[in-house]
Image 1 (cartoon, rainbow, N blue to C red):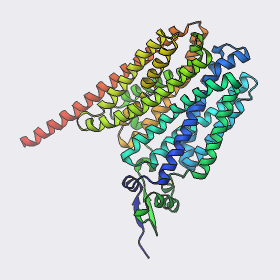
Image 2 (cartoon, one colour):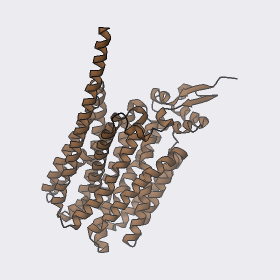
Image 3 (tube, one colour):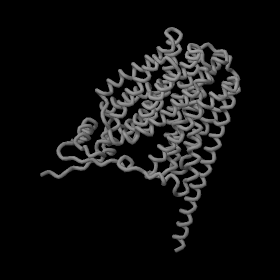
Image 4 (cartoon, rainbow, N blue to C red):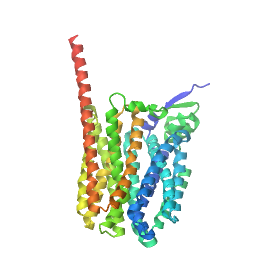
Length: 468
């Protein structure tokens, strides 16, 4: 009887050329990410028309936006453990159908109450799709291009918001607000059907669940030259096979770092979801036509996509050069610069709300700095925690950060209800953005202190050894 052969999945994927199966899986993840990003922002594009059609104030939609964002938190927390049990593929398909069906149903909502329920149900699906698209992309990507490919999928969500804005600017004036929900429901159902036929399960997930035959079928397609036949078992990364204890986030002097990191994530989501939800309404209030207001909001997403790709690439490349001698300095420097750029141009947007051309340019730059920096803070989270706690650290930071996705739309509704004009509201958004820069500065100072302490201890040990 031939001995059982043991294969390390990560090493196999890292060494092999990118196969047609991997390209198909990542392309489908990107397509679903684009539709996820589009559907998450449709309600923001629809509010001006809904407000006029239903005779409601724009501020009255604050509860709808907050509950929709809260539902995405529930979806993320609920479907993460479900995916660990059922698999990435099943959860991606289930959640896509969930948000697509309830987005389509939103086109027929007769009242605010019904629309709130439908957007909550759609939000649960939207929240469940996002982390599993990232996880599946990561598990199918070789290490040499993993950061770039994951960043592309994350940027796809911003691209979806941009395309959704372009579509809304054309569809709403011609066919009414219902049209964008019809498009936002039908398109994901079509791509879900394609994914059902062509999206493979994660080989790492199958191996971790003991399905070595299923993993062998996938790995044979990825690396046919490896000759995976006969009796084969697969080993997976510790990060895939085990869960990191939450207490590690607060051990080893990391408690303050964890809290500071959470503050940055909360601010990040607060500002971005405030802008997602209220930009079209505020631009309309400032005198822009409804179509032009939606187009300006869409360009925020285009800037976010460019920023995510640029900031992720710069952090990855510069960080590799600096990592040995200067820790995670690259990520801190790039993200602090991104938030500073965003804060400055939020002020510029406030000054040029009535100038259509300058508004289009400046809001795109705000998206580049603010939304683009989201990729960088994930890199910072990864640098703070040891390998054993890295997955938990990033996951909890994103989960806690989504508190900001609820607070942002709620804050916007309160400011509008208080009678503030668009210029004042935008200027107020500089405050949390500046706070994010200061908080990152505190984290950076602690990182440099830690590096110096470790270096000093190592030097002291070396001197002592030489003395003996």
